[in-house]
Amino acid sequence: MTPPMESEIFNTLKDFFISLPHCAALGMQFENIVGYKPTLSIQWQPEFVGHADSGILHGGVITPLIDIAGATAVAAHLDMPEALATLDLRIDYLRATPSSGKVLATAECYRLGGQVAFVRTVCYTADDYEPFALGTATYMRVIDPFALETSTYMNILKNKEK
Image (spheres, rainbow, N blue to C red):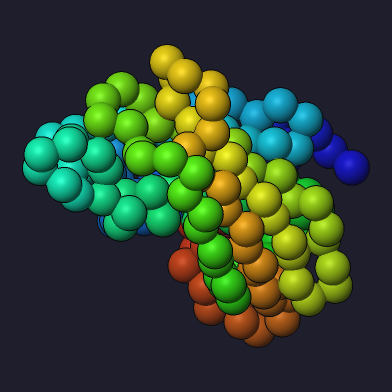
């Protein structure tokens, strides 16, 4: 299997994921990948605060970070183009979200089934590597050539080849 950073499929998918409008609005960034575990980040911003008195982040900021990190972890294992859809996403908050700094999410796809992928994600800050949230998700894998041919993802791949 090709290492993720050398895989055109992985690089196209990770770029596609973080360019989605809600990810771009959050300023989501790809940080790195170690083995098959990608890390994505969002920089804390005042407009992301969910509770004004404490400055903690709104859950609506953490959820897409965990979801996209998870999908990126699945993409790290793919050797052919596939579409992915989130089937289930659970987030357990271990403590309050950060009130400043960079928020990171590192994900691991621990089982890549024929139709479903299973992922765990850990959220932490760049200042404090102690997790504040854990995500568990499943993603449906769509390998149908017709569905892929008409997808936005395939259009991006085709445009890269030009």
